[in-house]
Image 1 (cartoon, one colour):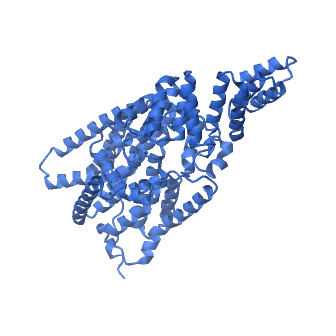
Image 2 (cartoon, helix red, strand yellow; image 1 turned 90 degrees about the vertical axis):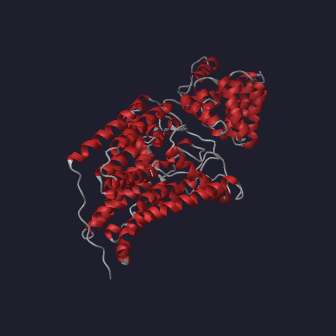
Image 3 (cartoon, helix red, strand yellow; image 1 turned 60 degrees about the vertical axis):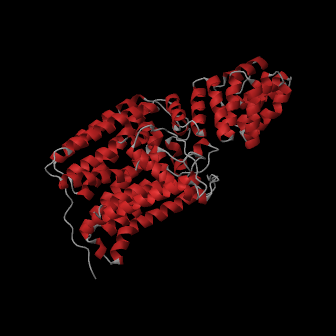
Length: 578
């Protein structure tokens, strides 16, 4: 039976190769240095500073519940305990200072970039080409979202773990004998990557492609099922373990699934893939949201054009890879990590495309760029322009990334950018309205909530619009939007509470009581709910019941000075439960 040929030992880069790498890493650090002064944005507040379970005493809870469980009421989408553990470690070291969270996020991106260099060095066998590939990976503007946004640190974390696993697998292949520790380590890093982000599940597929098409090792001659089983079994075991644990954790949670037909997913996938490639080649006008909608007809010109383009690109890629088999692995790194993002049922409606979804795929782009660099140097060795051109590309990407990262400074800037780039995206409008509301600009925020609702009627937009109109005194509009929210989601406690507050502002406390009681029935521990009910009861002279509500408010929220003052007013003796 044919056996695997013995390969040469792994190449250890000399210091002369590591010095340019260190310079590149320094350039990357400078590119993202401005992010160190940024604060919390987007999903950061609920996941970190507002997360009451982000303490060591709740570590068991964090590892046995889905990502959004501490926030309550959120759909079960993701099981990412290592991401939460990362936040907890940062909180322990730095408190709730977002600046240090940004520093560590950039450092993780640097670690992933270093490992990308070694993966490129391993596959391309060319230090200069590997350095150029690393520059593409580290400095490309599509990486800005993951390097600048704290909550997206799971992308570089998962990528670093996958890259480490891949490198260890390659080392184990070379050793063959006495490589048990390496195989176990490769599987362990894979499991840690799965605990960080679900996209890591594609790594075994990339390894199978590497096994099959690595002509240098004459892998095509391996008919030994024993070796193939040995190579892939650590990944299979860890994948089964992760799937079982994830299923157990999500067992009682409300599953997240948007009503997108599978036919629409299949028809839209080619357009998403092309849009991703377009942003790789033209990384300008990037945004946290895009105007991107489903394709629901196989006869649409958009689908037909996308399909023809995909077929042409695939044919070209196959022809090139047949003459340069190492490109198959690069293509695998480019395409396979995108596959999980095509499951649009896991996405929010009309929120299907994000730059961060391309983070791991950028290694494939980098390997292709490095291969092109190496080919040009071999084809025209007398030409001296390839290195200056590579430096110009890297510098251009660095400047573009530095500019793009500025949009992540705060929510108002970020979602103002989103609305300017994607005005027809309901999530961009909703997020911009939320950012303005957080800064007390309710009159400016309300039209964006209304526009979000017009684009796609949803209870969030209606509820937020009701709150915004209420805050600047337009009670008829506020009542209209709270009513719209309740029609879409009758279990929305904040809308019932808002309706009760409107009745109080209209000096109709008796009418407010049923709304406030309903809000408390749905969310009995919410901040301020008991206080508002106590106020309504006090106004209709139900003083005993009002006192009970004020006491309940203080029991739940001792900092509620309004409830304390009310009790002092109603109980002059000062006998307040403390």
